[in-house]
Length: 149
Image (cartoon, rainbow, N blue to C red):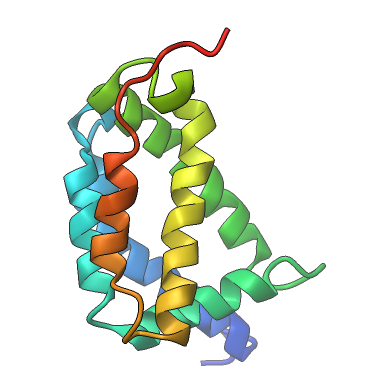
């Protein structure tokens, strides 16, 4: 096992990568114009059923910002792919302008921040934070808007 995973962190990164393949394969494998926020809502609800996986993701994501962490490359690539994919999904669902006149590229990092932040809050206080409901509240804010210029 140490041949493939020289540390606990390397093993956990491999587990997260496998989780991504299993959970989001259909979502991420399709063309971005077939993605919908309802798919993300389903993933949020599903993640609420498995706190251990969410906890591993959140802990490794936080640790990966330190220099030389074995999960750093995984998260850099994952977030870049997620920003691009979510921008495509937002464009397909809302067009070139969302609430406040923002572009899908401007909103994609915010969407990721909401997803990650909800997970952290839910892990800390699952009785007070309903990830699914809070995510649906956020989605309601994303409708088309006017150009701020």
